[in-house]
Image (cartoon, rainbow over all chains, first blue to last red; front, top):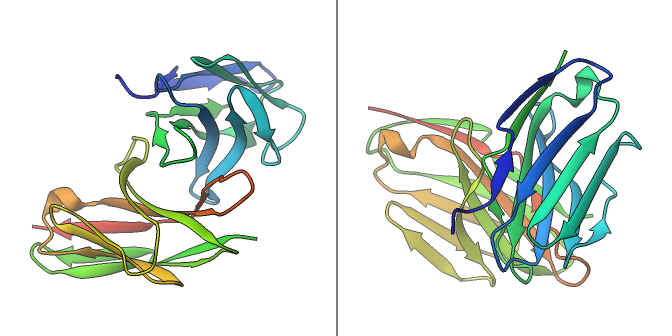
Length: 112
Length: 111
């Protein structure tokens, strides 16, 4: 398996624009996590899906953030409208039956 | 609320100088403790899972141990390629099994 695949690797956008981050989890994994990493706050959980269903979205900062998982092999994280404070590295991770999570390479988002 | 504290925040070692990284945790009931390695510009890479006090896992120059309150990542005779940030995460029993991560220890090994 190629591991967790995220796209794009880098995204630079202007404030107010919509940003969509994409994730393909490892085949057979039934849990998917979206994390955000910054120097100030470390690794923060945004949302957790189990069997494609959102279980915990308490980490989603505000209504500007939304996430979907239409099937077991694809998830998106959308920010609309984007703000400079959203600049961070966003990671997607997947796991099987609540065991160890495997991370993608991340998307570095810069909002100017 | 589950808490994970890693120390030190940063550690500089000479090549061959063994040391340990600490991960202290507070959780209602531990289901699992994970260690990850993160290189700059990359996602965290899974290293070990520990489930119960007294358990040990080894991989090359790394050995992870677990007690009821903390875990140690021992690095024996480190090499420059061991330089990375090491993250610890705990998973509580019951609930959603979402792992809580510490802030990490940044390790630099000088040749």
